[in-house]
Length: 80
Image (cartoon, rainbow, N blue to C red):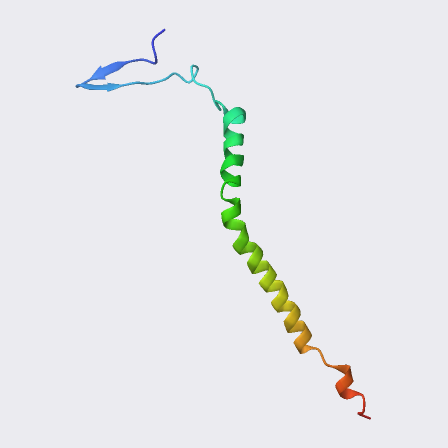
């Protein structure tokens, strides 16, 4: 069996493949999904520490802001 239909026109060779001879999603589940998982796991240790540090700083900052905006009840004990 010949690969596609070989056609020559003006010293240019072009190849075509019949839609009935090709597969729609070749190796999609066997190679595609594991490759996506591998590519997302590789940079995990490089990308996640800044996000974790930002989250910790953000939560600390919001807690500190709420604490600083609250009133100290001990400062108002003698007011009447």
